[in-house]
Length: 404
Image (cartoon, one colour):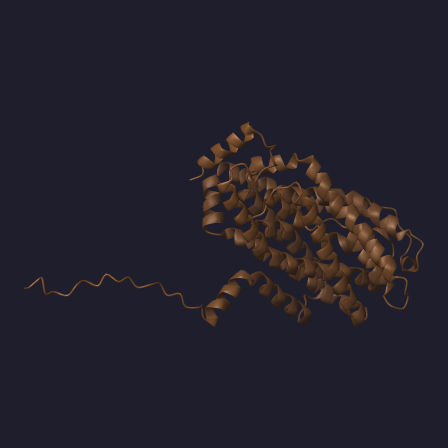
């Protein structure tokens, strides 16, 4: 064989296919990113058409409220570092910063909005105006904050700390704020019966719910993680069983809307009022979010900013109506439904915006971590900010070198 006349070997390497993704691959990617919102929309549509019978509403509420929240916090306890959790509990300045924005700031802003709206007595139903005041005084929501902070790669430990502290404070702060605002001599407060002044029932109910559905599962998860840390990592991280928390959150939201549609809460007020409350809810969420992110960016690392941005604008519906029925004796079913409407609408708004922000926050956190690798002097994101000094910068550089 004549090797001189043999054809040269083809050394050309084919370039990778850089064609644009097809419509079905884009659709699959969209479904993967926004599956939570899509599923939420389907569940709300189902709740609007088919509801659990009245005889089973209480059983459904107790089962979903306790079981699903317990699962979320058990998973959180199994995946959260104990030292990081304790470090975040010790940050009292940050607690004060967040809780003031959760209670005092929104209640004052909403009271101003309600006062301006109430200048026209023929425009809004008085029950909705009272409902807006109620929702602004309740504590931040628990389950959705914890789940979404985790999905956005934020400081989940800080969110757990703030939601547990906030809801514990809310047992005492919320009734005081509600009584203060509803004691003002304005026409829409005339629809309320006199304040009963007996808060023992709500203290007992909320403390029991916090203990059984949050603190006990969280502590149990921490114990399981302490003794079986490799097993917890394999089950919840490698096998992605932590996704169960998102499913539990969907069930919690579904049961809230199921109860609202069953009680015909949305049928008790004019449609124009519902639309107005929805627009007000969007404006309030955007305002609270803007205040939270602008004030926290000044002094907090990115992961903490994400936690603050989920805790501050959110409101928990679990305390809304039970609080109203406890503070005011003899609240009729019709007025109870009207008071319930604003917080239920706002819950849907905060879930939609929170879900949209997950991808935005995740990219922002990733960009910050890439910058941290290039600049070891930047503060780390999983612990309180340390003051800049040569000694601390040396410790940060040493920690970065240990990262595989």
